Image (cartoon, rainbow, N blue to C red):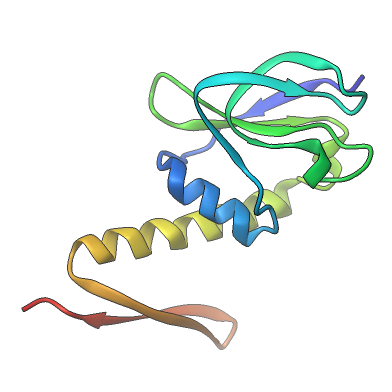
Amino acid sequence: MSAYHELKTAYKDAACLVDALGDMGYNEVEMHEEAVNLVGFLGDTRPEKANIIVRRKNIGPAANDIGFVKRADGTFGAIISNYDSGKHNTSWLNGLKRAYTEKVAIKTAAKNGFKYLGKKIVAGRTQIQWLDVRS
């Protein structure tokens, strides 16, 4: 049985986190108001609980669930097993952080009167394009 560990993150917006997980290839993501137990690779219920969960069936045949638990400070801590940290490593977490940051920027801009037009890569950097729709 692979032990879980929790990683501190700065994610605060659950919807943006779920969308970012979709960008990372996980389109089946559960959201729970109350945290629920994660499941290990043998189908065993684990004591670790999370509010946002990617179930093991969506990760790989020998995988455990990965989750994000809402903390008292409003951030979500990533809960990843030692086994799954081979795939969900620093590089994967950095990609998730980039996707999440982009989702938050789009949401914030929309609230401030800007329409998201798309993004493109210029000289190795991502540029997000906006249209000012304020009256």
